[in-house]
Length: 289
Image (tube, rainbow, N blue to C red):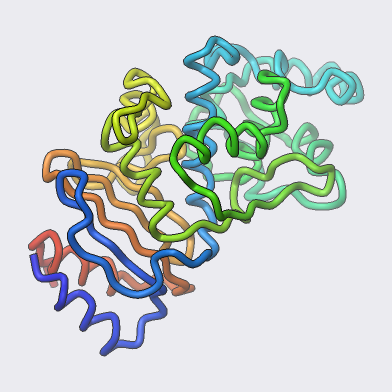
């Protein structure tokens, strides 16, 4: 491992990386840059929501195999057509978590995202990977109905507090629901805590926060895609898994190697240079070509 070479690549290439750190066997061994300031984590927010769903699942508050209609606000489902209700009855919470609902647009629009989502032309019989912020937004709405607690507050109390995460921001939909798909700010250090929780099968500093059963399911391949597989808002990565945000916000968890690598960046392009540098200098993997 050559962490210094990784940092040199970042600085020499002027990649817009805010900070990075590496853990080996639960111990922080390398750190560089701003690891305590808040930065946008974009779709890494989805993985945070996944853990919150797991906590509710463990306590019997939400059944992943039940229809989303069982958890959506009744006053809202009563406003859509019987045809739409019949379609949504075929969609389970698990389908939302695996992004396997065909027909959802990438994001909701307008002033009422729930109305937009519930009028989507979904095809429940067609199970295929369809990456959509609507799936995550609806999962957050369902979680609120299932727990009787605002999803943002549930995450604060049941996840962030036991992890010692004190500084954070998160966004809401126009109607006031926890967004879930994006709009969260965390530090590198605190995103690493989510990674450590998953790495340790649901425990943090010896305290159980979410079950090993849920973590094992959420981090395994539940839906295939061209990137190699997807769990419950968590991506397959090599022999481990990762938390991903769109502008290269990353937490790679590699249990077999005992490694967690986290970095927050704002690099809004399709390049793989930062990833290749990390793999070469931290993991010792040199990409072909």
